Length: 230
Image 1 (cartoon, rainbow, N blue to C red):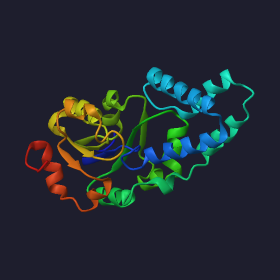
Image 2: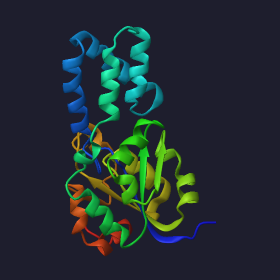
Image 3: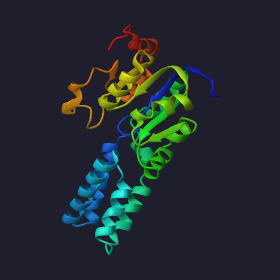
Image 4: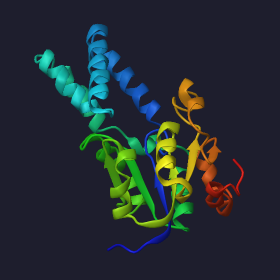
């Protein structure tokens, strides 16, 4: 059985450590050059259908479905290679790696992400995040439903969850209560989404992931017990 750490940091990827909005903007720009407007829209319609069905973003899976509808479109190969060759390391938020280094002084940092089993691991690896967390990477379909597995793999007296979705933070807080400090980096398109106010306020809100390089760590850990500032 794994040793129980005093604290384990669980950190999301997309729009938390890595500017995924910028990646998608680049993909959209590339597709405008490679595909007709009608076929580009068809891809994004299939993408949204995949996300509604699977519960996570599946860019390559949407391409596979697109291919089933338009099997002779050779531009699909170009779009696929664009995704597979994308320089994800260039899209890390400023000081993202430094934030990981700072947290690892206190306890292990674990990547905790949703996603498919091909593109999401590729993104984590090619961005340098896999190496930064020494291979501690967990990717689920719905991570908030897999907390038992998270605890089994990385047991801890206390967890700190850093995620750009308040929905996820609220779900984990409801399950773990005072055992988790929830940290909301107000980044990406979810940062000011209309539904943010529907959920309980996270224990800690920061403007960017780089703020963790200078944040008062004892105050952050105590925030779950109402001793820190929000």
